[in-house]
Length: 159
Image (cartoon, rainbow, N blue to C red; front, side, top):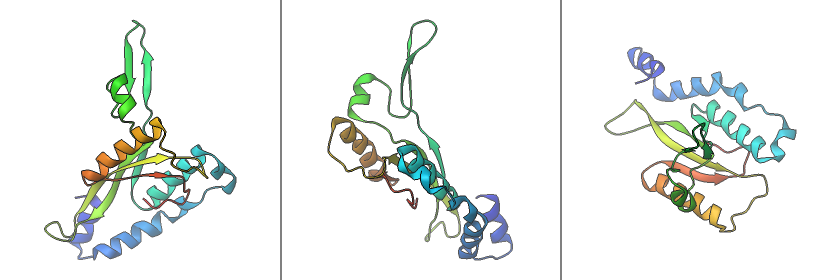
């Protein structure tokens, strides 16, 4: 249990009040300059700020391969264990956790739900290219296992 939730439970503060406090304390993080929202990186920055304001944490998931000093290939990023795997599945640009309050046997506890957002530039539409199909596969795996995953080109995405 995180520190704020433990404190709230100790003092009998309702979980909804804790959520409201988190929202109020991080509201300033929603501000982003409009001119930065015309690129994929601008959308990505906005999504990260909005997620943080809602108590979630998202990190950039760089994906690729390089050669080290000895000439050996080094692959990095989630689901990028081989070139063959990388053709079939591509992990999302943003990876993280969002707080979820469970309402049955875990009442009042905040649990972290896995989050994966594949960020696209404004105006993007799914076309089914091999790259997009591999990105969709990762999104489908995450959602099938109870995570939250999607494509987004919306700077106001609510994670």
